[in-house]
Length: 275
Image (tube, rainbow, N blue to C red):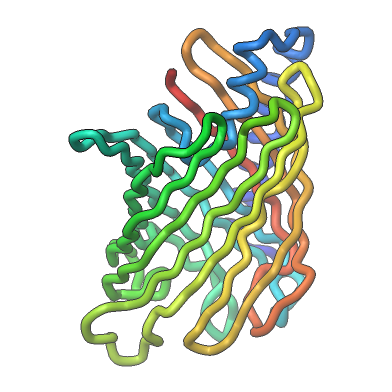
């Protein structure tokens, strides 16, 4: 029997899909003006020069090496804020997860807040339409259950690139490396992780777009990795000065090493930009 938490996650996913469909239907007849097309192209820019708040979820329907009826959920609250120090421009991004994962020999659900992830990207001046940022990343051990976090501070480096010169097709990547600092708690593996998130988006008109933004991970501590691919259905809607990016993106693992890696998951979100 699947867990109650898994059922809650599936209900939340269905509700998110319903909200997405209702918002998309309400704006289906809109035509893309020049400013609307620019906002649509910028809606997926991680370095957009706007304050943003995102509500994101991964519903993991199956894991490599685990029983078929085992599933999990990860929810993210993410806040981004552009900052200026003198003549330099930066972007602060803070992300806090709520995790519900099957752990232990019986694969029972363990739920709680995970580790807080913050990075500060220095935005380097480039030609118009291209964004490039690089800066430090810090992960704080804020997990409410020691099984849902590293129990150790981590430091790293994040690099973001986004090419939004075309109103029809945008692409880029987010690259991260981080490692644990200080003493590693007994029984824990020292964090030593890399992640690469390529993304590409094709604008279809009227705010609709497709593409994908899977996260490829590599664990340098044990050589485990996972490479998912996905296909997104997304809609960008403007409400006054707020741009809402609503999407759902099923993802399948095409290469992996190590049990417990997501095999199939659904990534969905409502990303808000306040202009």
